[in-house]
Length: 219
Image (cartoon, rainbow, N blue to C red; front, side, top):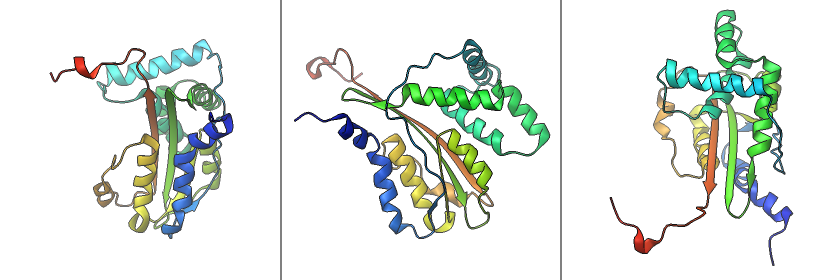
């Protein structure tokens, strides 16, 4: 028979749930929050000031800073999360100017983006996953910050970077549907890093008009 909506919902969250079930092999891993991803695609109308602010943010990095190789929405999420966790007044002011809007509006806007775009059907899928990983070797998690991260659909964990860094690599692989997306060598140079923040975007879409193998040639 045809898959039901319930089957589709289970399949949509399969990657994340499978990863959660694998925790037994990560001795230091502790999950700090629960993120509930949207079950149905919404159709929120973004306020003009939200769109204008986001366009200015993208323009800043693309034109003024000559930073062209990036995904605006994932960078936007990471910087929102960074802003919520910093205490330095100067840095806070700089980030606030870069991001635009105020903190409440930014969280609402990003939440609407997630709810409008997180979906999966037989022909297409958009998946945006965010993760925060505390290094339990050197730091204790901040509960109030974890609560804020939950508002931006950010899964939070604490674990030993030395012993269980493979969980982070697995999490990224599952989020982008690609094996060995990050190399474990990155953990050699983290030094006294206490928190890693990730924001990923996975997109899959079938062509409306498929390319024929018989008419496809190497360039």
